[in-house]
Length: 446
View (cartoon, one colour):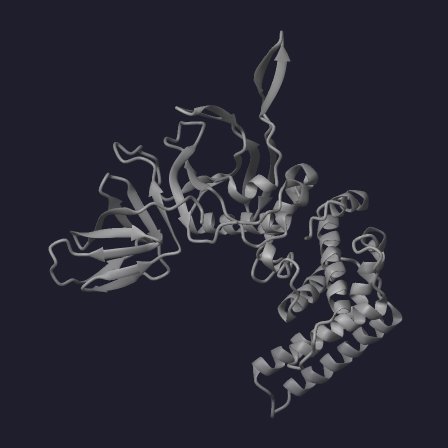
């Protein structure tokens, strides 16, 4: 859960009348304070947002996929996310209330992918002094006509209490800023992209943060922007025991972080840049293999093969020649009187487009490129071309409904192929084989 949720109450305006609400566990309980019968409709604005205000004056905005929500007597509104304004008196006047200049992530899973070093203890004349320094890692990239600036850093935090004073720089921040203000829908897209990146770096799909803030310029003339809204999203907390030494950090990625961000942000529904469905959700599932994970590994390998230039063998050239001949036959059939439906032809042509080198041969080719890096992943076990072919056949069998039992050889081959996917992705974003070998020595895929 991003930012620990608090119980809030306040007023929900509906058709000029205020109704009370209680917000708890991402449920809005909306009711009439006068106990009268309610039969109204809550309408979202042009941004898809519903609006409310806490009793102490903080505006709340709730994102809804439905434009209208009817209420009969009362409404128990479940939401996956909402945001609360930071100001409750004299809110600042910024140009557009729901256009944002950036998003800030704090703590949580971020703490596993960055080594904070903004505080040093130095000795001087027999005294220990705190020395502050800037440990920011910054880079920029462009995706879909938007220019982004990323800054990852730690911030010193001092706590004074009756039990003593503590100074810490444990919290890690990631600032993602845009060159032009973006809508709330773009914010959610960026949020999911950042979670995907951290999932790849931590080898866990459960990613959460201690806080998420939305940034805005208070005035057009202000050079800096600040957190004006706090975003709350209903996701499970990251309880993994993995630390910085068993994850890929921003220090590990170096300049390649730019390429990783660009790869993820450039992906679209019609253009797949990566396939990482085999990553376990948490520590409990990291060593468990099932049919879905095996399918996901094969899908990931097939995805990576499209980004690798595999020389065409004589057999591949012959298959392509055959495919062209079949296409000609199908086109001739389409021009006859008794034709099939357009959807049937689309299905046939789509099937032909996948004719080529067998999936197992593609994977074997990639394995041979990276085998020196992979040879020490499971010592002394190594896989053969037959193991890879058997793994792909296993996937094909279970995909078509056959019952197969996972054995040790399938699991060991799967572990190697997961590392092979990481080899391919890390190579694509610019890491050398030596660097990848070093990362694998830290057992990052466990």
